[in-house]
Image 1 (cartoon, rainbow, N blue to C red):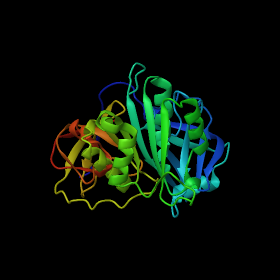
Image 2 (image 1 turned 135 degrees about the vertical axis):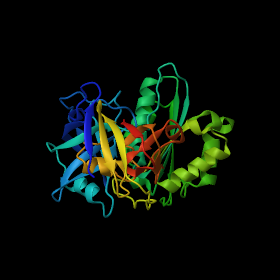
Image 3 (image 1 turned 90 degrees about the vertical axis):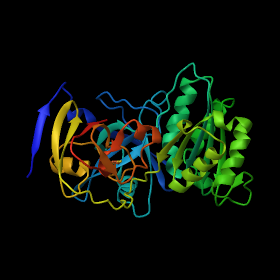
Image 4 (image 1 turned 180 degrees about the horizontal axis):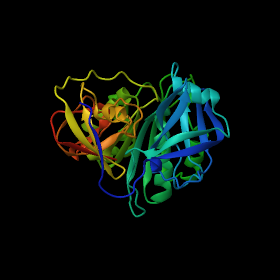
Length: 364
Ligand code: FES
């Protein structure tokens, strides 16, 4: 039987606080298949942290399609926020954005989210080693600029995988950073199909290449640095394995799943018998949502008109993250969460199903 109970428990949180309208100020071509959309400063207060993403809500083919794109700008150094979108061959949204967006266009956006965020402190002296592949540079770019601006004693080393020199996104901006912060920033490019004159690293980053580069950058101090990785799964896996061989503590390795804006095939869901009522705390209110037919918590909540945050619906972007306050759930895919987040009780509602009664989740 359908059951939907809404019970206010505290505060005055409103869902509208989660949405904002952004107007495009400028479209800047980065490479032949990648554009940066620079937004005008929004009228409503707009806050974000380095490494976070925006979820765009786009009216395409009479539907409202959501896709997440990382901000490439730093909240500390860039006046206007911007995202960078690389065209994916059959990608509905990436092609739409690259073909249609122009200055003056306005669209709805969910406020910034994501947990691929360094904890920066002005008096901190750290070595950061950042690995990016292709458009995985986007959140890394935001992180680079922020570290250099906020932590004057820290060093940043970027390892950047691309196919060839023409595919290097933010080439000019990175050159500018190299000149400005020549003492504290370095960049190693790795090209899988370089032109003949290329003298740098070539090939696809695998465990041996990653290990060589790590030795070059940090010598016997590889396990003392902080790492941020963003790119395709195989790329991140290779770097992760190399870091594990150097005994880098897992808490120092931060990964952002490479979300191209196109959905991946969902892992087949294990059938979980039974129907359960789940309590969801959203924007300061508590709701009871009935879950049946092996639906995820997100699917059931959306069916029952709850304005839940979400984007990829594939367990990657973390826009739907919640904290499990009581009960148990089964997650069909937890790649988007770090070990630490899982231990702290965070779940992704788009891939979570209750396995028994008494589940309570707080969104955020
Ligand atoms: S909506 Fe993207 S992880 Fe759940």
